[in-house]
Length: 576
Image (cartoon, rainbow, N blue to C red; front, side, top):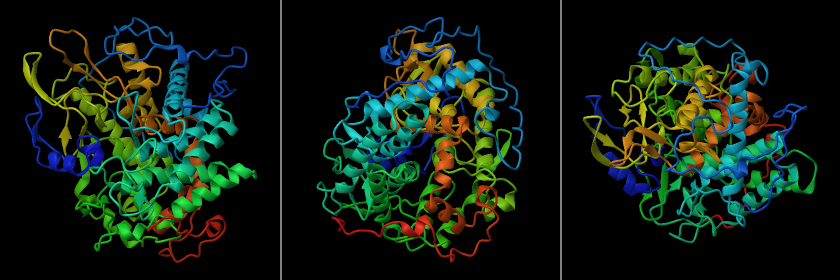
């Protein structure tokens, strides 16, 4: 699993050592729980987002920043009346209805069964979350921060990948003009391409085409010596790079430059350099310690690494690496809270790769054996989390059928304290989750768990978002949508108010934005389907069916043609 999501936030190798030495007994569960902007946009509403007869006057910018001291209003932040109560049942969640072979529809069809009020909420949340990526980026380099607002100064290359995708969504929805998005995208790509690539400790932004997890937002250089060269964060960046490459297709000087820069950035990633002798990819490297001992094996967000590496035209992985990654699947396959699926405790592992790649109806060899695709697997994981909250074995405050969501997120503090007559162990940033692999829960809820699952199970994810917003109001919902996390079970000494975060994280905002748009229109998925790297990677991994067609898998020997063949060759540049 992703190191920075499971270990103390942004602390690289030392954080990994800390977490691996930690064994937690989660109070109430009775079991050990552990686990290995500068330019001003045009905020114009579009016909897609606004009824023609009643144009919306954008008022988001005037909303106050989220404050932990704000009292909960009686009405929601966009003027909708709050519901009188939120149901909390202890019954087993119903088995999700299987999707038809073609998967779920888009746009109007995907809104069936969703109230007009909830559709409006999704539009509002998407708009606000986009604003985060637009406003938070450095005005000179274009780099997107790890968290904002915050006194921390590091940029996250994963946030940059989500940001590059966000700008295309902004164009489509009319939040910004196409020239504005092109300018911002060029600024980012130019910054990333000119960063030094070498093995020096502090005079590089990356090495062998990979990038450091955290960069100085002004210089683009490695943030500190505790920051690893991260394979997964580079993959998240490259997803955004490939999206930009396939989204900006107009025959203009600027959009041609975007495509050229994207080709160069992607093609210089030396995937085989990060490969271990057992055909698995390492999680990272540093000048001080060499390759990390941790590697990517087993179902997680790491699947995107292998798809990208298999689809590359330079230093490509071989299909045997996909099989090596799958090797532990059978150990994680099984029942959890009424659902049988491939387990990964925090929901982010079920969301990240899916934010860009549409797995509906396409299957690899393992899928074919089990009779489901990875999209359906993630859908079941969402239902299992909801069922866990309904059972609420830890007796955490407010958990129920519409209040749920465990994933890696901020938390109140690393502390033990008495709440509700019980001794409770609370955590700061941690990879909370529930599954056959582990359970880690301290009552902290992350809205991105439901928000990033809207495309999988809109019928329960949107209800959860609505319930959280109505119940907790502006304590958790503000200028940029939902804050990163909150904990109704944690109260400061002598205070009635529960803990709520006061910042937003790029890697949690990203899934919310992308998956709402995928639910609404399929924009990100459909754009990536046109990218030859994604298609080739899936085919070489053995996927067939669905939107890939019925092309027979030939072990990756099919010559690469068309757009893929035109990708520019890797250039030396400053790559050591």
